[in-house]
Image (cartoon, rainbow, N blue to C red; front, side):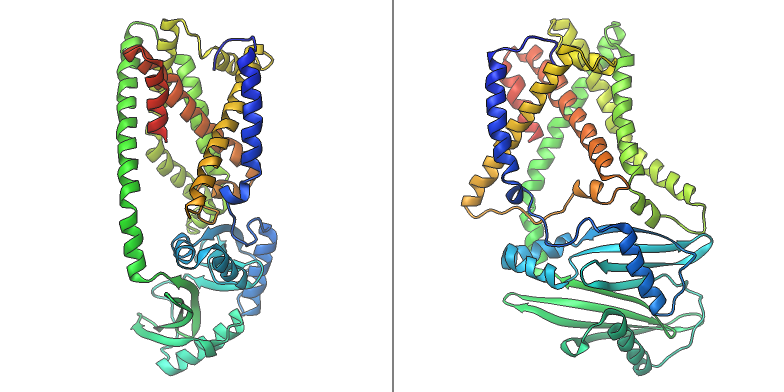
Length: 453
C-alpha cells in the first residue's frame, strides 16, 4: 500500500522470487488442493432434469415447481475414510457412487408446504430423496410387512439397488393423527479392517415412501478420536482469536482517541468498510441454491431471503465495525508517522487506476502473494515427506464458488473481502501500531504474522 512510484532493485528480486514461488505453487495444485474424483461443476439444468425425470417416473408431478441445486460433501465420513484407508481407496469409493459427494436438488411451489429434495450423483443418478409431508397428512395405516415390501420395491426401482447385499438392522413405527409411518434401516459392510458400514434409511408414510437416504457411518471410537485430536488446533485457534481481540481493542482505543483529536478521516474508513460489507452481501446473494433451499414456500421467497440476510448481517456486522476502527486508526497512525503507506489504496479508491503508485503497489502485492503461496506449498510438501496429507477437497471457501450463480464473481467478492481484512487489519493497522509502540520493525512484522497464521 506504499505511495512509492519508483521500482528498485528489490522489486527485480521480488519479481524473480515471486515467479519462482508461483511456479512451485501452481505446479503443485494437486498436492495443495486434491479434489475428489467427482463431477463438482455439473450444470444445474442437467441436475434438475435428472431429478425431475426421477420424480415423474415414480409418479410425482413437479412440472409447476421451482427448483435449485447445491453441492454437498459429507466431511466427517470423507475424513474418516481418508484416515483409515488413504486417498486412493477413498477415491475408488467416490467413483463407485458411495454417497460422499452429492447434489441436493430442491423442488418447491409457492403456497405448497410439501417440498421435495432429490439427492443426485451426476455419474450414478439419484441416490436418495425426501418429501416433507405434514404431521396431519392422511394415509393408510399399513402393517410392518406390507410397508417393508412397498419400501423395498421403491428402493430397488428408484435407486436401482440390489438389497440382497444389505442387512436390515432396525425398524420402528409411529402412529400419526391420520396414518401410520414405518422407518426401516439396512446396512452393508464397505470394509472390515477397520469396520466401515454404509447405512440406508427409508421411511414409509402411509403408503408413500417419503424418505430414502444412504450414508457412510463413522465408527464411534473414530468419532471420539477425531474430536480429541482437535484439541491442540482449537487451543491454538483460541489463542489466535484472543490476540486478534487485543488488536481490535487497541484499534478502537486509537480510533476513538484520534477521532476526538480530528485525525481520523472517517469518510475513507467508512468507504472501505462499506466495500467489504458489500462484498459479503454480494457473496451471500449469489448463493442462490442455498437461498432457495431456505425458502419457506408458504411465504413469498423474498421474505425468506431477507430473513437469511438479516440473520447473516447480525452475525457478521461486528467485523465491519472492527474493520472501520482498524482502517481509521491505521490511517491516522500512518499519517502521523509520515509513512504514507496507504496512499496507493486511497488513490485506487478515488478511481486513479492508472496512478503509478497503484500499479507498483499492485505489482508488489501480487508478487508477495506468490511468495506466500510458494512458502505455503514448500511447507506442505515438506510435511508430506513425513507422511502428512491434505484432505480431499472441496471444503470451506470452495463452496462459495461451486454453489454460486456466478462462480467467478463470487470468488472475486469473497477473496476481495478476505484480502482487505488481512491487509488492513494485520499489516496496515497492527504493523503500524506495533512499530509505534515498540520501535522494533521485526516485532511489527512477525507478531501480526504469527497471530494471522
